[in-house]
Image (cartoon, rainbow, N blue to C red; front, side):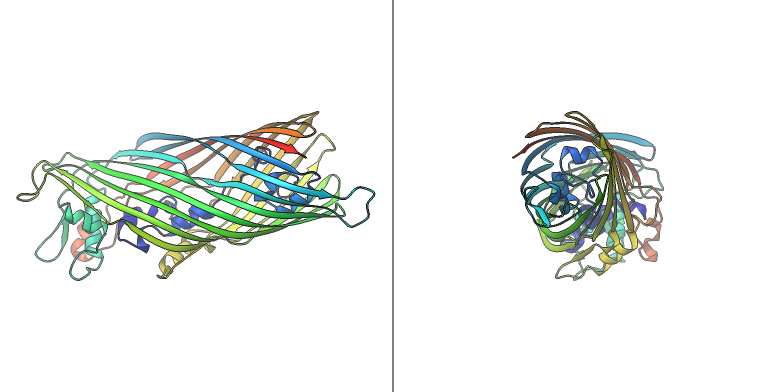
Length: 498
């Protein structure tokens, strides 16, 4: 079950136009499993900001933190991200990487506060607008392996699909993977209507996968202070998504009449969503703050645009007057659907060591099995898979800051729990963070370094159950690609108080 992590429907993603092309449990997890973000100060603390407040990182953790602002503030952040993927299949290892510049956060907080001698229980209030990058999709991966006789080949997989899926008007499903294979002579049909592969070599295979884009949220938040003891806040979040993926899967000979094949698909997802967050911070003493926040599901409206093509190169024409280089492409497809991500709840505490610094810690609860896809068509099977595959998870964050006159030194750690029920491979995410800062009366600058790592499992296709006639192509081994992924992110934030 763990291989669902980056499965992308195991090339069944290419099966037919419409809903079955890409909208599945993988999409639900991609946009539900967000990362901590905000200012370099928050990032340097491992994202532990639920009880801390007084920083623009509160937009993405707890809007009650705006109630601790005593002055207005503007911040601008910039980042450099380096991503590396080390993949292994059948004992062969390969590495690929991708770097990019990004803007992880922007914010403006406008605060008003009563004078110390002015009466009133409500001491201050702040309204803010913040932009936070929740996910960075920029990644490039590559793997290459040598399969044996007992490993499933792409032609066998296409034949499995043709024999399993019902015909439409006596023909293979339009825009389906099996139609691509049939039109390029990769599979053929016998007199009994049984489809078989024309090419089953002991072949080498490889795949390049490149993704770009991001998931970002604009928050419109309000926070207030009651007697400087209890702070409350609420925010409206508007999330935007842009995700683009290009995958190129290929197989090589030796074979008597076919030299290689190449299957390429492109997917672009764009959309937006809305969510609400409320929170509170209680300060029983100057040395202790306790915080909590809850976030509603994010309700997304998404649009997928996609197409797929297959090319097969022959040494001899597959039939009389046929070209040696066969190519077939699906029509450009487009599909609109909605996604509801899970509810989230967070709690935290911050302990202050006088003017020398503080220690802060958070825990966040999220149930990934509650994600839900919806559209005019039925997503019953996909939503059931989400419930079967995903599970509840706890995300832990802890950080500390030391203060030395105008200088700040920070360190943190975060562990985001494995969202899968079965754990053949642990896919929890670990983050190690560090940072520094300089604080002046009306100006500050912070820097942070975040190193993250996690594992993933991926298969380019799966065995499908077919009728007895096709049993010879069933229960062959499937290539399983295991990857170790690391992200190194440097963030700098400049801020002004007024």
